[in-house]
Length: 347
Ligand code: DAH
Image (cartoon, rainbow, N blue to C red; front, top):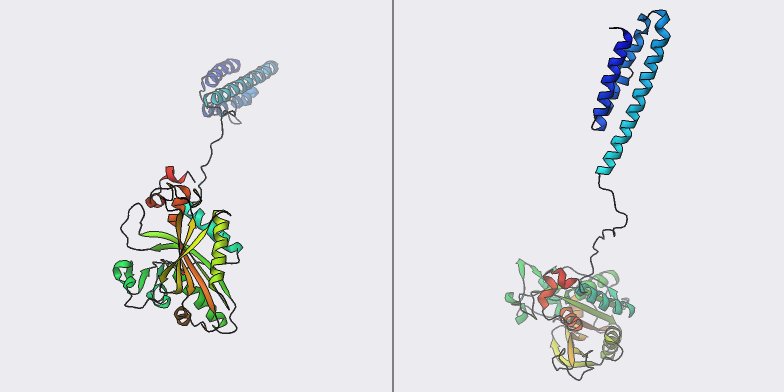
């Protein structure tokens, strides 16, 4: 077949392949096959040598024309294919609102604990924490609750093994902090004062209902110095109450008993909703109980090695759930631990 006929056949074949290419990969293999460096067109160009001299020029021109024709057809097809591809692909709609990442919030009990602790921090107290798995010494003995004390009944504590129990009160942190303090400074004349609060979870094997749970939160406080009196206790706790519940709130101290304080009291604050007159929220009481407090019993100082002739102190332990329920209008203590987002999202 004369070369020019071959060129014509190749042109047709190449045009067909380029136009038939349905995807970029097909088009690229057509390009390699016909227009590539060792492609069919290049082959034919090499054969110009065979052409008689008087026809060489015409053959060369023809080959070049076919080559540039195929190249522009290839470029057109390439453009068409990529336009088609992007038309098929879903286009981003810049007018759509962005997708928001839901941010968590702080659990209402943690909020309450942080708020309480924050007020005490501004009053000069340091926040300390202690372990939830405790031993009997820190949970009972050092707190003046001897072995035969009724509260030490195994039924009143979660016993893990041997001497490992779940703490039933955050008062354990009082002991741990005082031990550490005595280790560092000694419990005598050189000892600097202590002022700490300890927020955290506690455990008691209580039957669960709307107002009781086997796990609940407390914030413990301890202030030890020379000459600390009940007036300091009432002054500090009164300031705490006004800072936390508002300047109008009234406080009330009722005589009570705890083994680790003498004297002991229960502290109430007036209902923030009715100002103490009695309403539905405070169940007509006018008062809400915060928790216990009192002057540190000298036996507790003895247990940790603080000189009880030199030092006195006050301590307190407030329950968080009940106050949070009251302040937030929550009707059931179980809501706090059910992890129901519909509940948690409200705070
Ligand atoms: N630990 C007590 C309880 O769980 C609360 C308490 C009362 C703590 C009086 C104190 C305190 O520090 O002085 O019932």
